[in-house]
Image 1 (cartoon, rainbow, N blue to C red):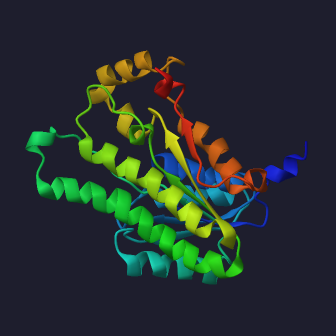
Image 2: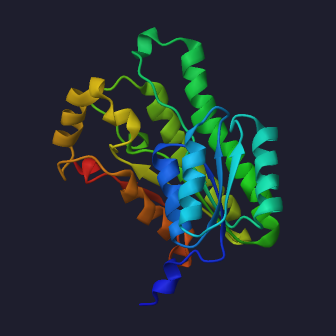
Length: 256
C-alpha cells in the first residue's frame, strides 16, 4: 500500500476551534502529517499560542487567527488572511462548538439560540467561506466535527439543543457534499464519542465520566489523539472517494 496517500505534505489547513480540545489536537496532528496550519479561535483563547508553538516544533508553518465563527465577515477575513500568509487552503476542519446542559422545559430561548448559532450557523458560515476559495480551484476537503449525539440521545444528559445542533451538522454536511460533489470539494463529518477533553476531565464530573466509560463498549473515553487519524484520513488522498460520510469514532457506543 502506498502510505504517501495519507501524507498532507504541501497542504494548507484551516482549523477552527484550534485553541483547545479536539480542534487543537487535530490542528497539531495535521501538521505532523505535513500540513501548514492556520489556527482559528475566538478572541481571548489562550490555547492558540500553545497550538502554534507545537505546530512549529513539528517543523511546519503556523498562523494564529482570531475570529468569531458566527460572524460571516470575521471568518471570511480569517480565510483571506490564511491564504495571504500561508497559501491556498486545501483542507479545513471546523471544530469550534459549545455544549451546556439544561432541562428542555426550562431552557431559555437565548440558551437554545446560542448553541444553534455557534454549532450550526458557525459551521455553515465556515464551510461557506472555505468553499468560496476551494470551489474555483476544484479541490478541497472540509471536515466538520459533529458528535455521536447527532445520531443518538445520550442517557442522563439534558441537552436537546446540543443533540439537535449536531444532527444538523451531520445532515448539513451531507447536503453540502452533494452540492459540491462534482466541483472537487469533499465534505465529511467526524462524530466523536465521549472524549477526554478538558471539559470531561474536571473533578466535578468524575462520577459522570465513570458512567460514560461504563456505557462505552470499549470501556473508556477516547483520547483527543484518537481523532487525529480519522481527520488525517478524510483530509488526505486516501479518502479521495469519500464525501458525505459521517465517521463515528465512539468506541462502539452507538452499537448498544
